[in-house]
Amino acid sequence: MLRKKKNALILCGLMLGSTLSGIVPNSELPLVHAAAYSMVNKSPVTILPIDRAKFVVGQQFDFLIEVENVAPQDIKVLIDGKDAATVFGKEAKVSKAGSISTYRIDQVKWNKAGNVRINVEANNLKRSVEYVVVADKAVKKAKNVILMIGDGMSLQSRQIARILSKGINEGKYNDLLEMEKMSNMALITTSGYDSLVTDSANSASAYATGHKGVVNSMGTYADSTKDPFDDPKVENIVELVKRTKNMSVGLVSTSNITDATPAAMITHTRKRSEQNYIAQDFLAGNHKPDVILGGGSRHFLPQSIPGSKRKDEKNLIEAFKKDGYNFSDTQTSLRSTPKDAKKILGLYNLDNMNVYLDRAMLKNPDVLGGFNDQPGLVEMTTTAINSLKQNPNGFFLMVEGACIDKQLHTMDWQRAAYDNIEFDKAIGEARKFAAQNNDTLVIVVADHSHGSSITGTYHELDGKTGREAVRTYADAGFPSFVDANKDGYPDNPDAEITLAVHFANHPDANIDYRFKEKPMSPAIMADGKAIANPMTTGEFYKGNIPANESSEVHSADDIILNAEGPGAEYFHGVLDNTEVFFGMVRALGINGNKNSK
Image 1 (cartoon, rainbow, N blue to C red):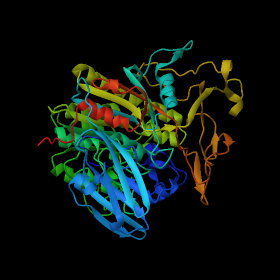
Image 2 (cartoon, one colour; image 1 turned 90 degrees about the vertical axis):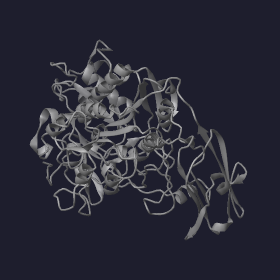
Image 3 (cartoon, rainbow, N blue to C red; image 1 turned 135 degrees about the horizontal axis):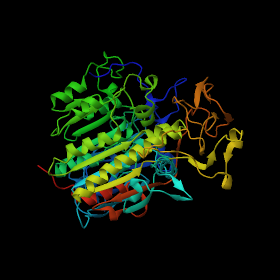
Image 4 (cartoon, rainbow, N blue to C red; image 1 turned 45 degrees about the horizontal axis):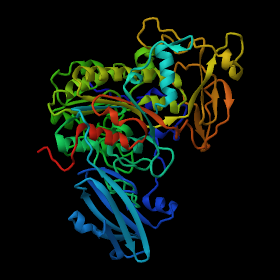
C-alpha cells in the first residue's frame, strides 16, 4: 500500500530546525518577466524567442512581440523582409494590457535550415534579432539517448566522489569514476537569459528545448503577464521524439518527480512550483512518459489523503493505473513489476526520496519517516532501461541524481558524495547497456554548479580542532576513508582523517567538518533573517550571501559533460548548455517537419 505518512521528510531526508525558505528546490525564486528584462537591456521592445536563439528544423514554438506604449496595430514584424504572418501562414493575434501591446503567432516552425532575421518596428521604435536553424545529423545515428543529469554536480563534487569511492595512493587515483571513462568531454556554460546564475528549472529546460530560459521557467520564454501558463512555449525533446519518431520516454529521479529537472523534460510553465499541474501534465496529451520513477506522491494523491499537497480530490495514481501503468510504491513492489511492462509509474516517498547514506546504510527510522523500502537510483535506472528498450523505435531516458544538489544546499558534502557515487553507478548501468547494443548515446552532465572546494584534509588526532585542524599542503596528506567490502562506498563517512571541504557561498553557520548522523540545516530563519542553526556545533562562520538566504546557493561555475556512443563527437571544447539538446537531436537524426503517424 502507498504510505500515507504526514511526516515524510523533505529535501532528501533533511531534518529541519525551522522552515528553510531560502532553499531553492522548495521555494519560489523571484519572477523576472520579459518587460523587466527588456528594461534591463535598455529596450522597450521584447522579441521572443530571444536574439541568437537556435532551432532544429521543424521544432514548434510560439512567437511573441511585446512593445511598451504603442497601439497593437502599429507593430510591424518582418521575417527576412517579408510579413511575419505571411511567412508563418498564420494570422497574428494582437492585443493590449496596460502599457504593453502584444503581437503573437503560436505553434509555428522553420521549415528549412539557415539564418533568419526578425525586424520589428512600432512607431519610432525598432529592434532586430537573428536566429539560426539547423538540420544536422550524426554520421552514425543513435537509436536511443540516455541523458544522465547530476543535479549540482560540480567538478569538485565529482572529485570528492572519486576520492571516496576509488581512493588515492601516493598521489595517483586507484581508479576513475564511470563518467570519467567516457570518450568525449566538454565544458558547459550554464547561465539563463535573465541571470548569470541559473536554477535547476531553466538549466534543465535548456537541455530539453535548446533554448535559454529564466529562473523558475521550463519550456517557455517569459512574457510580461503573471499567468504562469500563457508564456510562449518551445517544443521539447520528449515532444519531439514522440511526435517525429514514436519513441518511448522515461524519467527517473531521486527527487520529487515533478521537481524542476524531470518536469522540464515535458512541461511548459513559468513557475516550477506548479507541481500539481505538472503531475497532471505527465498524463496529458501525446507527450506523457512511459516510465516514471522517483518521489513525490503528494502531488498525485487526492487532498483527503494525509500528506497530499493537491487542492482537489483527483487521484492521479488511479488515473495512471486506468491508463495501463504498472504502479509501485516500494522497492518490493517495484521488483514485482512484470518484466514486459511498457508503462510504469513508481512513487517511493511523499516528497524527495531519502539519500543513499540514510536509505541504504544508516536506516534511521526517524530520518526515513516511514519510507523504509525505497529502491535506489541504480535499480530504478535498470528497470527503466529494461522497459524502454522494448520499443523498436528506440527511447529517450533522463536519469537525475537529484540529491547531490539538495545536500550541497545544506552543506552536507558527505551525503552529497554518497549520492554522487550512487549516480555514477547508475551511469555504469547505462554504459553497460550501451556497450551491449552500440546504438545508444549516453550523456553525463550537471545542470549547474555549487561553490564547494577541497582545501585539504581535517583531523583532530593531535588535539587541534576547528580551523586549526584543517591541514593544508604537506600537512594535509591523504584522507583515511576505508572501503573494506569494495562496493565503492566508504564504510564510514566520518573517517578519522576526512576532507576539509569549504563553501564559497553560504549563510551564517557553525562548522565542525564532521559528518552528522542526522541531516541538519546549517541555518534557520529567525525574524526574517537566517542565523546559524543553534542545534549545530563548531566554529561560527559568518555568511557571505544575503541574510534572507538560509542555505548555500548555486554558483555560476562552468560544469563538465561526458559522452560516448553514436553522436558523442558533437561534445568537445566549450559549449553553451543549449547545445546538449542539439547534440541529442543530431544523434537521433530528428527532423521536426516529419510526424511518426
